[in-house]
Length: 72
Image (tube, rainbow, N blue to C red):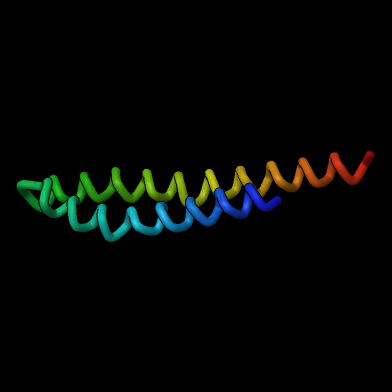
């Protein structure tokens, strides 16, 4: 449980830092508004994967582990 909490803390810290960094680099990389929008879309989707899917998988893993340990 403690290691899962620590991992989730890192995911939140890194995952939420991606949004402002992505916004900054999205506008530096793009040569046109369409390029900037495309770059931001990719960066934000990667951040969403980390923030939502990875976070959810950790919660699921802890729930399964705790459920299995309570059966024994």
